[in-house]
Length: 232
Image 1 (tube, rainbow, N blue to C red):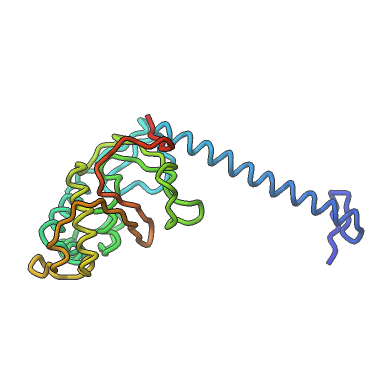
Image 2: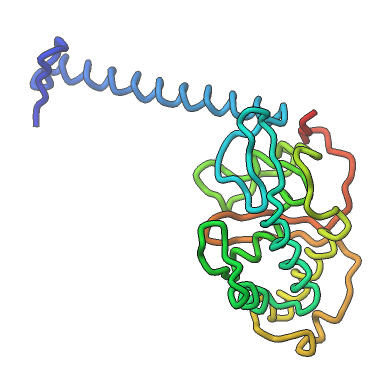
């Protein structure tokens, strides 16, 4: 197959023409990668300054473009609080989803609640008021980068849950998942022996759903390491 350009002075039917086409393709690829690097650098810089880089606004919040700040949506906050209260009482994500759907309380898009959507409300560090960026490898939302590369902005927006309650929830979820009842419909009476145990050791695990994943730590906040970047 040969390529003849009407606008460019090369013809792949000849050796020089084929070489010229390859050179042009190499520079086109170089420009694409340089553009991607510039965009990435700008977004990292914005995140380091605590600026929102766009995306789907988390449930319970709205974004004011004028002030460039997040505000809590009262109606969604009430649902959020109910999710947390129900799970702390019954320790069953499917139970929580069913109760919300039975009450006619659906997601922002009007869809029934599911286990993954409830799980996200219980595990996302966003609800503690922290904005995390550069957590996942490019092109793979499940691959987590080293914590030293994360950009963390604390007190980025109003929190819906305090850190102590959030940490306790992560321990509870981890414990119940290990006991095999995280997505069961069992009530509090069905708590397994594994979920009845307590643990003081740090817990680190990955949360995966159809739309996102989080790397959760139940460890108390500590001073950032040498490579860790915290937005001011």
